[in-house]
Each structure stands twice: as C-alpha cells, then as structure tokens.
Image (cartoon, rainbow, N blue to C red; front, side, top):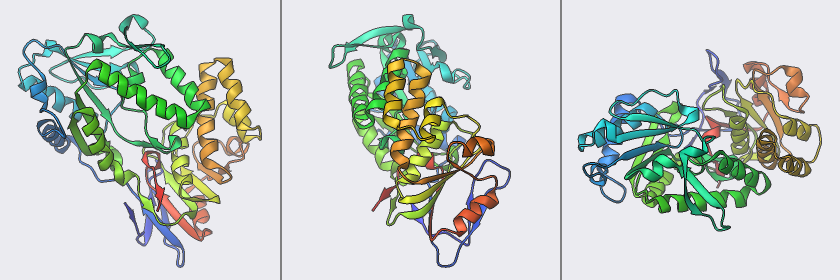
Length: 402
C-alpha cells in the first residue's frame, strides 16, 4: 500500500548497491510496494493450508479416487514455484495417488525447472501439434485445441498465478491454461488481436479462457499471488470462480490507490535484467499516476534492443499504421514488436521517458528516450521534481488514482 517515505528511498537497480534517494524538503513524495510474502518452508505451509481449506469446494484429496490419472498443469511460473508444486504433489501422494499416476505438465519454455519428487514431469511443446487434441469451437466456429495430456486426464489441477498487467489495463494473461497449453497459432492469434484491439482482445481472452476451463471440467485450481522479491503472499484453492475472487482480493496490495498524480514517477522492476516487455509493463503502471506532461523513469538492467516497429514509432512514425503493417505482414516477430509498441504508446502518451539500462547511451537517445547512466542521474532527476512517486516492482502493479 502507499506509504510516506522515510529519510531515504532505496530503489533496487540490479547492482550491488541500490539507488538511494534523499527526501527533498517540500517535495510531495510517495512509495508504493507490494505485500510481504513468505519463502520455502513457510510457503509450503501456506499451500498446504490452502489445499486443505478451499475457498469453495472440496479439499484437494477429495478430488481424487484410486486409479485416477492426475495432471498438475503449470501454465506459468508461480512465486516460490518449487514449494508450491511440491506441496500440491505431496498432498496428492498422501491421498493415495502413486507417482506413476501424477504428471506435472510444464511448458517448453519452463523445461529446466527443478524436478518435483513424487510425480513425472511432462513437457508440452506448442509447436508439436500431435501433442494437442480438439476440445471445442469458439463463437466464430474456429477449432480450439489443448494439450492432449489435459484432455486425457481424469483430474486436472490447474496451478497458476494471479497478477496485474497495467499495459493491458487489468489482469495479466499469465497463469491461465489458455492459450498456454494450446497450439502456437492460438498465442499468435491472441497477440494479433491484442495488437489491433487491446481492450476488446483482453475481454475475448478472458471469455475463452473461462470456456476452456469449463469444457475441460477443471474444478481444482491453485492461484498464487506474489509478494515482494518473489516471495509468496497468498495462495487460494478450490473452484475457479471462487479462487479468482480470493486471489484478486489478495492482489489488491499490488493495485494501490494514489490520491494525486506526480510530476515524476520512478519505477523499478521485479527482475532488473528482464525483457523489454517487462519494461513496457512498468511504464504503463507508472504512467497511470504521472502527469500527462510529466516524466516516467524506469530503473533496469535492460540489454534487449527494441524492434523495428518500436524504433520507427520513437522516430516519429504514427503507431496505428505501423501496427497494421506489422499484422498484415504475418511475421510473428514483427507482430510481437507491434503488440508491445501499441501498449507503450497507448500508456505513455505525451509523457517523457527516461531509462536506466545496460543499453548504450547513443542507442537510447536515438529513440528519443532520456538516458540515465547512473544512480546519480536518477537522483538529480528526482531532486528537480516538485512531486515524486516511486513504484517498487512496477511491472506487477496496477496503481489507481483515487
């Protein structure tokens, strides 16, 4: 929740030492942080409590009968990932399910995660269409495919996170079975839709994700909410609608109410070395509480060069024709680039952007973006502002003006 700053504001920048900002007399300033969570053994305890006392519906062991083939589907990494998965699998094992009847289904991108004892790990590759089965048709009669392992399972336990994505104006896409466990074309189509129609595409995704869960009969869902520093702040278990409600309530700390916008908002990242997509999310969050003619400063260790669509937009080309041109090309890389460009253009508006990163100064400034070479540069920027908001781990935030 928002709180008044102390004599010194410390901002994690991915270096050995944080950036330290002294409090400026007469400056209106505010810090926003997410909730403090737990780790390792304490995280395991939080999960065990949740699966034993559901938000709605029976506890996890009651979902299983002897001989069931159980799939624990992990749509995206969750905070304290190993503790969460191990606790879920241990609970299933304690209910009598042998290891050869429990599968942990992971995405290809997460194949190097630690093995969970008491279960078999299965990797789903969305590029391998033979690993999918037809599930249903959408409202436009397009076939929807999901991982064959999910269709063949007797019991599916969905494990995911609940969080915010300010670039999409609300709930994040990560953590849902759809389209993560579908064919690559499903994710590509969603990205095209979001690039062209961000709000409408987001609503379409939510509706389809709900329909896929219902069609598969998934009634055992685990939702985790991150705490600061990749700790685990909350876990809910039970029927999907009740779990989502409980998780949304627990994630309110990541959506603080701010009474007034500021001239300058400084945003740090949950992972300073993260991708451009993470930076875009942080910019979107910061822009929500920054004056329309104010400045957003993102503190990162970004080394990823922006794509051609992003670059042309920053060099003065209108974003709308750029996005449409990229979508018409059918090139997946260009469409992904256009998707991010539309998001940041829509969020940033006329605000000035300053970036602390591992990119060369010339590369940053060629994009009409201010370059902060050091913590001293960020400090000088803050000293000149009449009002300041600091969003810690801003890529996880959805701040709201009261």
